[in-house]
Length: 332
Image (cartoon, rainbow, N blue to C red; front, side, top):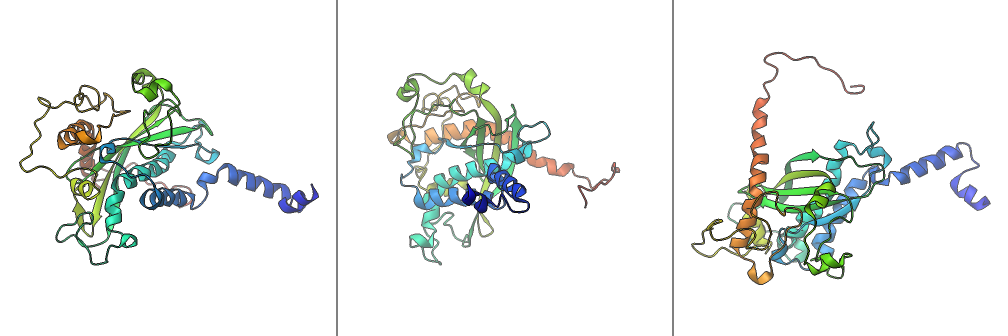
């Protein structure tokens, strides 16, 4: 006990306060300075350089699951997780997903894997005039809050690629109660087994009402890839990352008349809300642009509404009709 007292400084002046500060820091480790950066780069480095399992193209629309808890410093005055703190958690979940999806393209442009500084061919956005450093930028996010999260309550974030258009990737994240979703397979972690015997066989679909009741919040975000000043089209990035095949010459999507989402293995009737929580990946031998485009267009029904919000910038008028006042936040 004497050694413990000396180590903790319990008997020293202010010893109790020192111990209290240490315990408070440990209880809120997630919110300490630079811990967010550690979480971010841990996800980035792992999926690009340390992930042992190759990602198959047909897993393009599968979600990744990350779990965390809500420490005291993330509480608001209602003693629930503050709405503003959802976004920093979702940053980490989206980093896991996005780097897993495009890691092959990143490796092609990495000097650690033999790419020369002047090399352009084979890298993401490998088209004339796109030479320069890559930048993956978050362009916007919108979140819908459904239920509160209590202090130190564990929750899962399920993030998946929703769709893409000519410029943006759209990712959707569900914050849910842990253990409600029961994946039938773990593509990047094949050693894992499903805890639910029914879920592992794939014979019984998750109860939709139970899934909806487990959701705390849902968010949609959009990302863009830049190479220098030039935007890399999402389809080109996925092609360079070997997640989609090259389109056959003259290929044209025929629409729902010939290919529906229920036929291509994602389940549902094509409605944006049907089967969005646990999409079923098609088998590798069936992975083609009819399947890819059917799911992309299904997600685009929702993403287009989010993209329309860009027009809200035009509502800023600089106060031409007057303002209520100007007030400082805290001291400044």
